[in-house]
Amino acid sequence: MPYALVLNSGSSSIKFQLVNPLAAATEKPFVVGVVEQIGEPQGAVTLKTQEGTFAVEQEIPDHTAGLQLAFELMDKHNCGPRQVDVIACGHRVVHGGILFSAPELINDQILDMIRDLIPLAPLHNPANIAGIEVAREILPDIPHVAVFDTGFFHTLPPAAAIYPINKDVAADYSLRRYGFHGTSHEYVSQQVPDLLGLPPAAVNQITLHLGNGASAAAIRGGLAVDTSMGLTPLAGLAMGTRSGDIDPGIVFHLYRNGMSIDEIDNLLNKKSGVKGLAGVNDFRALRDMIRDENEDAWTAYNVYIHQLRRYIGAYMVSLGRVNAITFTAGVGENDSHVRADALAGMETYGVKIDADRNAGPNDGPREISTDDSAVKVFVVPTNEELAIARYAVAFAQ
Ligand code: ADP
Image (cartoon, rainbow, N blue to C red; front, side, top):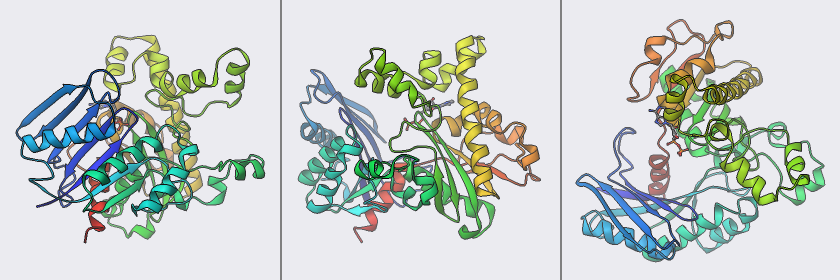
């Protein structure tokens, strides 16, 4: 059976999966693994296969050593590229700028273009490039395909993409709304027309990707027309550790009062959002704290929901007519309270949640609105790795 290797390479970790591109969305991948703490004195590779979970701990100096170790561990457990038919490798690339609107077969020129985008994603793109370089060296005979987080949002109309900032400065610094989580919004939104029994061109929809990072998207006839994330993935909804939208003046205020730019960056990306308000970023822990009537947890939750409702409201108005609202990712798929609170009291706008359906198990795409709800509400599990695997193997045929 042909498989795709899917790589998500970060600055100190590489997440990898061997995926059967023909698998059902809910099927477990053949292999799931992660290389962690690259560059630290004690690194680790963990592998989950159908036979069990395996790990090696040792120093992993760089991405090359990390991926090699991952392949050795896969070989040892009979699921490596030498035993399994790996026909393509898909790479998650965070920033495609305005250059990339669709997955791209990687060659030296494409790699240079991704390198040129480093100023837009200084933390992410270099790590993505490191993963691509290593994987091309180790697996030189298969197509390597870059799948961009920004690609799906290439269709944003100018009014949604352009920031009201001096246009020459915006041009000099490539400032515009790019959007992220595109693979997930696209994958999930493509399933909605079938759930509605309508042709894709007739469907206006809102997708809510609520994971640790979170974003909303407005989609008209399959094309993204608005999204909550911006030049970077810091904008928009309140998230696990990111602030989402704040008054940009806060940045100057903190800077002028003694914080360095790196400290502010760290504050807004890693120590804000739900974590900044309640001390935890996992919604299961937040829910336990709410049950114990912890006041900070309530505040964090209310801020999170408030922000989410603002975007839903804005997109309902900008789309004009909405056929469906869809929740996805860790929080969106699993937390029925978030879904109920995000849409509470919207009956006048045609949105009615069915409490029993909403409380049902997360076992595939499902409707959670009432039969007479004019706007249908769905939970559709996302599977970015499967989407990337499918894009990648398309270049192998
Ligand atoms: P990401 O890919 O952004 O890291 P995920 O989509 O995997 O995130 O979502 C991770 C988040 O999902 C966790 O931080 C947690 O808040 C939330 N989550 C996962 N499972 C549950 C659950 N059963 N109930 C509520 N929240 C959950």
